[in-house]
Image 1: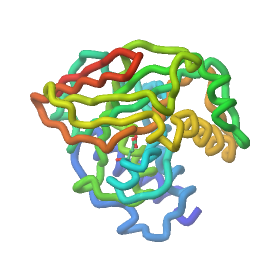
Image 2: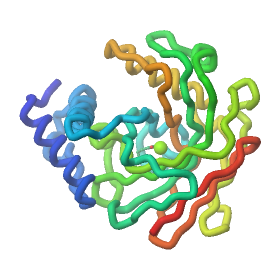
Image 3: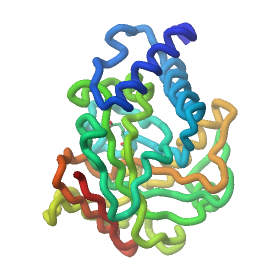
Image 4: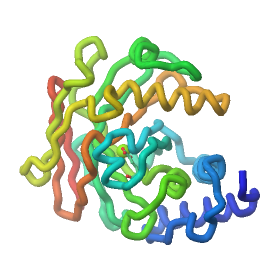
Length: 262
Ligand code: OOG
Ligand code: MG
């Protein structure tokens, strides 16, 4: 760790205020180029602590930058991990208020709901599939707190990996019913197909993202708890949205879900 506890608390407050007040900030590594990975996750952890203290419930975990399209779009090369909240959960067919966000984008994801806890190190896709209760399609609405969505990996980890809102819905399936590598998906904006992908876009197999999360947590003495909802990461690049837009996601053999922006 390179930052002291006061700086970590200050940066967490800065980032969380930017989120809650929907205004952007310059990326924090500009003022703190020395910060390291542990600092970045410590800031994210402090944001989580602030939210829990205020009564927010953490309802799931997320993997980010797990597909090549996303890594290329954002100019970074390593996946990262964050959390999602109760107030971020939007029902299928529900509304997202654009005024509560800075410059939202949306991306299609495959979500896992775990039956058993999963603890790294040494987690692999077999262990993930054995521990999964079901998979379900999801849409994540990301909203980087950084100006023009421009960041480096440490800044985005501190910013809880741009987490803002998410939707899960459609037809859940047991993992035995779906080939997670070839499962196809189409995301439509206002009725027009705008992004297409297959599960293998996410680290070759979306369960690999969950294994990576378990190994990341394991290195810190933590685990994925039984019952956890986990977003495995955007399959395609994220699409910018504005008030008035409607997004629909169709996933092969897993139905569809949608969300409106007002
Ligand atoms: C970082 C969050 C990435 C994903 O699914 O790849 C993410 C960002 O692109 O702002 O949630
Ligand atoms: Mg995502």
